[in-house]
Length: 223
Image (cartoon, rainbow, N blue to C red):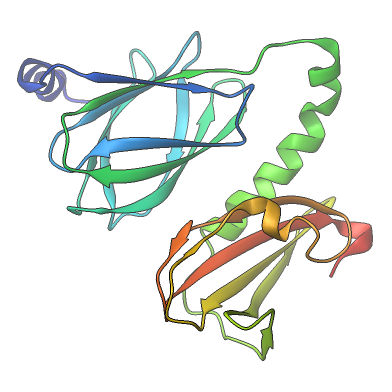
């Protein structure tokens, strides 16, 4: 990264509003990012190796010397997910809301290391790898037959993918009513057999709108 650009960026940054993300307590952290100013994102004791986000929503500058990211929104309001991989191959999914506020410092605390966690690391990595593949799948997949869930929601299967041990599916969830719906991953944790993880791209769904849902299952029980 150009040192002069980073120097100018640091000089121009306003006072940060600190937001803490604890990987131990949340599979999907929720943060607020400034709509107008660069936000500083870093992981305590680790370096950010890769960041994946929608290009039409965010732009970012990598501070490779420190392993940090300065991320700026391209839109005035809305929300989108950010996926991060650190230098120990741990994955973080952060749901970012774009708001009219001062820039934020996002301080990520990695999950504590212990024997049980080390045993589960491979399984968690498989799940997150599949979720990452689903997230970056192109938007031009074909919508299939609609299945009505209840009087105000319907769902459509869009596409499926296989990894070494996991099977992932993308669905389109439609709010067919006129009232807004608040969504949570737990609502779909039993949608099919042996669900390992659920991710919803849009947690607040206005009437007559839709969002994507990604569901990861063990491959031997694929949907």
